[in-house]
Length: 244
Ligand SMILES: [Fe+2]
Image (tube, helix red, strand yellow):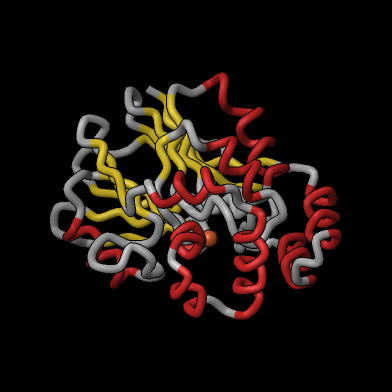
């Protein structure tokens, strides 16, 4: 089975459409790692596009249904969340409220969570120490996360040695070793922050036991125009164009 893993879409419908158009006929399942909304101008359309897939909650999705959470964000994110909340329909809030924090796929040997396993699903998994903590909590050999918007891989051997892989070879299949455990940060579809503005996502092939990272260009000028037209903060399109 080929599984497309996408996340951190953040209402960027041009990016989401470009990824789905490219991949959807080649894969069997789509899993969405949260942050469907927030930042960009098409939150409703993003929800409509992913609502039939397996989704989990990101912190921006969670904030839509939990107003106190909005103070957790910086002022730019807060402005965008306040704008986003006004765009959503009743059915969108119902959909977001029904999403879990994580999903475990025992048969396919993987788990998905937006940030981290443990008490706080919205903690950032940033370094080898947090990777170590997450490896201990994993009940499957593979864990896919998002949240930082930066693709990265950690692998752990049977002696609990952890290797961090920050350079990703795109479009190259990584054949996984069944004796190792892996954590994959899948990057972001809608707002990459690794200085590459193209959408980032992952395909997991359960039969080959392989993972492949991919990048996809999209009509970023259209997304930028919509951010400006809706009076969302200028910083949002400046960072989008730079991928930061
Ligand atoms: Fe995000």
